[in-house]
Image: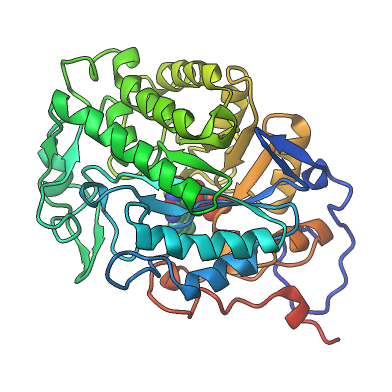
Length: 390
Ligand SMILES: Cc1cc2nc3c(=O)[nH]c(=O)nc-3n(C[C@H](O)[C@H](O)[C@H](O)COP(=O)(O)O)c2cc1C
């Protein structure tokens, strides 16, 4: 039986991954891990009380998924009200939010795991209901995005269209870099082990990177160098707080989610990966183009992005997007990636590293509860040990 077959509890499995490189230690910057099965950043919308403050339900969820020597990347976490694009997403812009996160990082650490905070500005992917009335901001104005795209935004009244956005003025960019820097400081106060910059999935920094959404003619538009400038300035700000070895970046080469497109993604992401070499980052997190956001669009496609970035980037690579236990093992053993992040399987399997290690069947995820607001489909997925008779 294959490792990732779904089967009833109590079946006997022929193969385990205990001897795989997936279960060997790895150093990511300043952090030493005991295994390479990473929890991907997963927005779950459970922070719905006023103030976007992480709560005890979230504490239970992250505690369930913390494993000895394991690594968790937090759900995307809002750095400012103007960057707030998802109802129920937690924030990193107030002291109360820091206090909420502090309890979560303490619980995760108590279980021997490590945790980075994923820092997020949604840019145009928002609605005035989330930004206290301010128009969402982006690299350039693309009316098609709010008029014709299928993009939708989670808001207090449900899924709504993105609001019309405006282009950031040149003089406004330093203040957003500063919002990221402050959020990095808060993440430190909140007890995280480092920060991951969300540069993928069509949010603000991706909107600057890709030329389908960036038509600027100033120092932040036009050439690949100019389009990469904002992200690199933010990385510099994060490194000023944490040092390079506790900062990571997530990119989605060829990512199309959220209305993204680029005329030459190979050249763009090759340049970017090369530029990121200078920071001595903890890792570069690479999303495979076979997934678009949270769905697989190219069944069976090999991990091409990790393969390509590996040739350019000198540090550790976390590969993500459409991995199963067997393909995760293969990508790490081939050397194209050092670690693998799982999204949907981690939603449904609180004990995923152990299940992968032992070749146990996985619980199925329920898409209908990805972004709902309570414990159902969040903290009630069973551990394998609860499925088998003692
Ligand atoms: C429910 C859900 C929420 C997600 N939220 C985020 C997020 O907050 N930040 C992010 O970078 N990616 C997010 N993603 C994308 C995942 O991190 C991951 O790249 C994607 O699910 C593909 O991996 P998988 O095939 O292992 O699920 C989300 C995906 C899902 C399913």
